[in-house]
Image 1 (cartoon, rainbow over the protein chains, first blue to last red):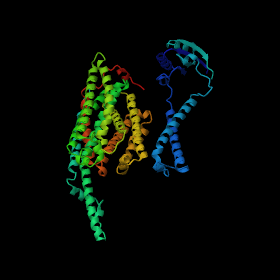
Image 2: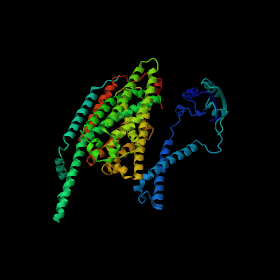
Image 3: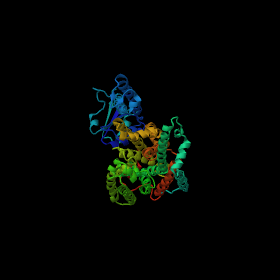
Image 4: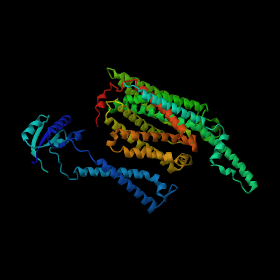
Length: 175
Length: 439
């Protein structure tokens, strides 16, 4: 299979959406779509699988909750029990109302931060990463759809030209 | 147009009749005198120690006298609590169904004021639920008038004898007095019902209108109503619930009651929508609309828990006697309902409705919705009962009878209102967005 792709440019997200639907209907494989902003419903139109980040978020939240319970028990009950406001810290259960805000915050903290880190790793984003977008204009006002060339290249180009593209380019994809 | 099926109508009348029987039983089974209560207490054996004999005859006599005196006092106390029981049961049920309609009205006003696009196809369902508001509010007002006539003693500050011996209530009597209480209640109710009828009229007028004047009026009146709502809702919760414990106060009580109201109201909207869809109506409501309602059910369940806990934690931490007494009763005599409702209102919706896909499945929403409604009934129960019936509480025939009676009335009024207008509100500029709503 060749690494050749056709890059079709669009200047409007509605036209792009229609184009994506038309291309998928014609059974061409869309490699990637680059947009300057998130386009609502594009993931469904491209047929991408639903994200599983919610599941990881739940697991990270559970880790955060468990960590907070362990931490508060270690700090306030085992390691250094104190009498705060007439509530001696000799029992976790009797003092647990005071720990609930910390448990809540650490659940949110773990879920949020680990979720962001997971998202970056999954999207292959890290410091000094070279930008993948084929044209710098996709960060401004242009939308680029990359379609894999599989079969007749000219037919594909003429097909894409009919989808409202403003510019079209056939290029080698470097992985 | 919706037609009120005769099956459902019969069902609602059956509920009302069965409920009325339960309520009547509750009133008839209250003890008629303190003597009856004494016999009852003796039989239950809880206070059998009075009969214990003592070796020292001199001190025995004194002891016995003291005991008789305290038993008398105790029996009188229990007598008053038991007298309050059927009234409290009715009050909790009346308030519960009133708040479903009331918070639905607030939710409805929020949708208009924010010019939200998605819920337009649900407007007629919301309007039908708020149809119960005039009925429910007037019933509550009648209840308050009966209270002020000393038919019951739920609000102890209405009793001049209690006030005469209570310095704290005396200090509050500028606010907590019967005429002002009734005037306030009348102002709230007139304001809410006025907006309800006005918005309903505009909404129906917009159906066939050629311009947007009704829509604009609806937007403006909704925004104004929300201001009125925020103030009166808070004051209503002080007057109608917090004043049952006239010594106790909580600054976030209005919010706490609101959170309970709004989550129950949205649940009711979802349940009635699903019921109507199941009957083949509301074909324009898709599962994205249900998803949004379920998201609100999920979110407001967490919001309720947040306020439930915030109110508790600050009072627990400060540990001021006049404040903690509220939670001492609830953790003591009301332990099971007080902590059990956290499982029903928080843990269950949290775990069941967390998954995005489950929020679109009707039977998940219905199951969770019923649990949420039961949980928030218990929430109101635990707000009211400790002050009025104390340790004599029980969810028995009077309580369930009251629920059934008001539920029957609620179903009858709501579905009758539903027949009065087309099920799809037209003429809203965002109507198309709502009909094509897809998430």
